[in-house]
Length: 481
Image (tube, rainbow, N blue to C red):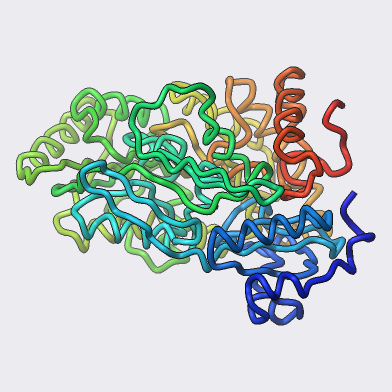
């Protein structure tokens, strides 16, 4: 297919399209593009091309289609699974969307924002806030990750319990197809029942069907009241009880409920210089936040009363409610810094599984039991108990698990954790996608007919197999396998 025969494809046309300075050829220029931020995946690119508009993206893809050159789309390159990294063959073009940075419109009446794919998540949040609106997707990497990548991976984040993942926030898309044709469906409609809703094929497809260049996204009223608390608990079973209480008491006001294991809290406070939020240590912790669109001083009182009742009933051991924005920021900083704490403690292997919300505690207990006798790793848990996406993180002792055996050991550990999740009617990927890490496992977790339909969709949109090859599907496999 594409590959060695196309290594000499004429790049001068690309320079004419995007400008000479935006076709990066040297290793020095490409250094920030050919490896992922965790430095686990490394590739080789023929060039990095940086268009500034949908029209330029269209011309680049038309050029690639004529010359049978593979394209690897890339946004902020903050993905966890290598989905935006080229292969090592050296014949692929990285299409960087960082220059598509225009926010085309902020529509208050329709509660919609139209933004190009290279806008960072933070830029979209700030543009919404200027007109007293909220774009609710919230990630630790929001200052760097880009909305095109958020859509391509169906990002979830911290407020899924109230607002849903990216799939629930997209009204319409502008997409460039593999041959360069532009599919313009930037609808702002809340109702549109006119046959197949094609945007959902591109959301979560990781750039394998088309290149997202712009999107119309939902906005919500900006909360005027936020109440945030940290609670200490004895068990994940108690955490599910608290979740049920919070839903019953506060309904849609419950925007976030995150769980951290006791060891996760210890590592984060120890290695990141963060003061522990509670005076005593606990086996488990919850970060809970309520939001309200009107100024409501009574919400804090109601929340404190509910937490006190949980303490009286024995499902919460201790709790503290943030008294001001500074303390609230400290609570959130603790949640955002868990990765740094884990990395300081050893070699990290994180998992992005999801299970039905009701199975969250059972998932944790089964993973704990599976590795109870392991001397070369320790387990921490952190994540979104409100939507069933709890990250089981294995931290390996670097002295006992050197680099040369890490990948083999990681596969063994991941297989066990994935099987536990699947056994609870769960998924091997909740919000990070498939990329390279999970590609070779994906087929075994799909029903045969489901897999065949996925391959057929890929072939229908990308018959030459030029878009992000080797992601989702292994390279050189036929669509009718």
